[in-house]
Length: 496
Image 1 (cartoon, rainbow, N blue to C red):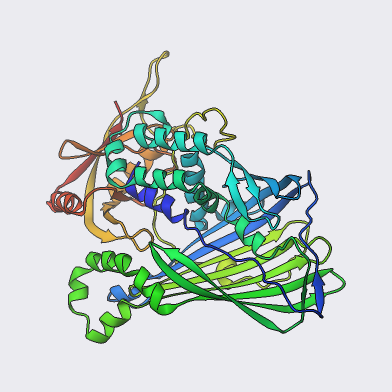
Image 2 (image 1 turned 135 degrees about the vertical axis):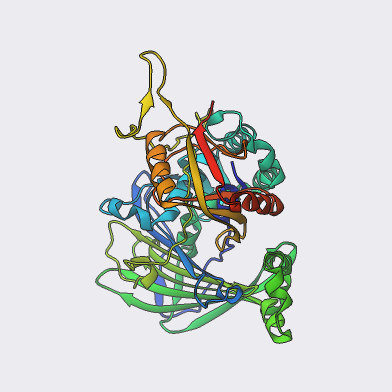
């Protein structure tokens, strides 16, 4: 498994510490305590997007502003509830909701999430929560971690993989150790919706006045740095007909403390743009070293049982001359939408990165792991020449590909270096036919007779572009030099 896969996987493990609503003064509107019905499954439509702008580091403003988007349908059931807390089951899916399958190319986050589910080896989680719905424990952690260790050691699909040592070098085992120490990071990775919904829920009835704001202060830990965060709650409106109340939450991290916490990440980013960083003015350098984080949330809460029916969240992080903004919208399917959706979630056309995300082949689940996801391979196209006997699998001839360009760049999504290879038009067509013919099988890519990649082919590559990642930058630069030699070619074949 390449480090690019794992860094994207880590990207899905971002955990935000959220607060519960504070107590409010007497008078105004009473919002009932959270009292969900047990044994009833609720379905939620979830839309997400991330916008990354790194144009500061590039010559053309806006050239590196990209968006990744996802749309999901997740299900939740409260299994039991007592005076101490609740047991909740989430059933998870990376599939696009009905009616959106034709838009798959514009929702790359779904493939990333599918890979996360495969890496964890489950498509369902059972949580122990407090009475507000905040997760506090997770069942089956040992089985999930064991599955992840097996994938890291043996590679996707349970087969021995050359990438196992790369996984160790890229810190995959450090990630697993952190998950063992704090299993709730698994919840944050796979079902952050649980925490966001709980933000608007309180086990006690709260009385609030429309338009009156109330602020609270707490500390969050960022890499050992304590960062004060100010939260401001406001009851915006109520709807007697619908039986709902709309609340808003605004949060801001202390700028100085948050900037301090982000200095290691900023230094790492600047090292990737060393030449550009050398030319920064003192004002530009000071700006690059500043960081900020803010969060705004709108919540529609039921005045019948205190549950969150709809939530819209925007989180903005600025650091190192980059801006990352995440959008989340959750709607319980049996309720009408009332919150406006950010334009990024509904736009028909977006500037999306050319990620070429390879779905991970799923492995057999171990005891206690509830489900797994896989993408069934399509049959080879008839146009691909194959040789076969009646008893063995089809043999497909290797193909030799001519390179048009090869450049090492820094991904604005993962901050990981990758070798971006563009094939000539003729080789792009050859590679397209080859990848269509070998769907569902493991391949090898060789440069100068050396195997540099062993990907499982889970989707055809149509545009003649290949990205190599998970290797040291110097090694990538060396490969790029080899491929820039006139007449340089890449051999691609089925893995022997």
